[in-house]
Length: 358
Image (cartoon, rainbow, N blue to C red; front, side, top):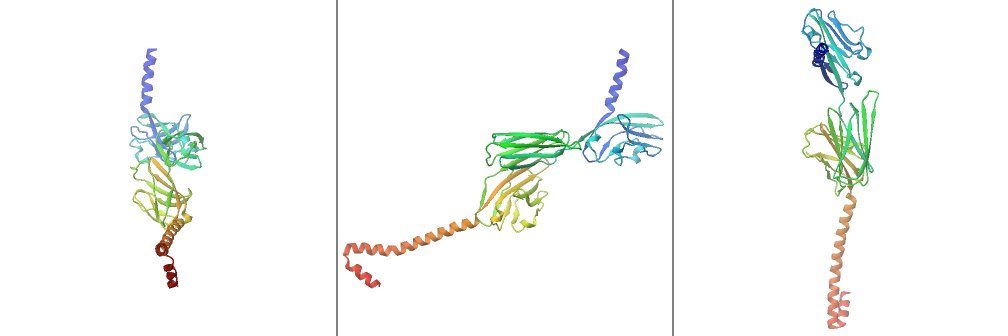
């Protein structure tokens, strides 16, 4: 028993030392490391558990006759480095199905060696979509691996309930969606949706600001972010949630304005605010600002009300009213004066005044 115990310990220790973990990103290239003591007559076999052949090399060339079809056209060795002891395998277009424990078998005239590599696949959270329809806010993301987690938060806290669904695609990636049902939607509440995996976390916030009234043909629509230190961001402005106004890919890089909005967009401030001109009732609606960097996305909605025509009418009416009052006072003052004088001196002067006036 003692001898058996001592014979097993070195084996497991050696196996642990030679087993590497290789993190790979979905649909990108990945290198599974394998090294040996160089020599001549090199033989390299990359094999999955159960003798599934991934890649073979001997007689100074690739030998792919027994290669499993799932790896066809996706594997290669660094041939110029094989004689020096590099038997690493490059795998392209990594899939979730490639997540296995691989055995690298090498042999030369000096002897043979086995080492092991565990391939771990990750599809990080890249983009979170968030939108509000009525009292429902929906947060979703697609193409994630492994299974993600989603959490909501609100500032200030508000009464709500949410439901979350997770769906796995044919590619074994996860799509996640969650709806937050608001009991009493109010402006200036920040709704935050966070989606996490073992490799990364992204957060998207939504804020509905108070409505903005434009009294002239030019106005500025603010782009609100809860984190004022947000740097190196991309910017997208939309109208009524679907029509793209402007796209700016990086900070301090001029944005591209869509053709329909070129006559209305005057400029974009450093903070992302949109300066509009030549406004009419056609530009009345919801303006959405989306600021993003590698970790976070900030979305703010502002309802713009155009009061140009109605505002001019009010001002004009006020001016006309003032003019009318001035004219009434100017006409009434002499009449009041002579009325008071008549009261004091009698009716004669009044008749005389009237005759002279005529």
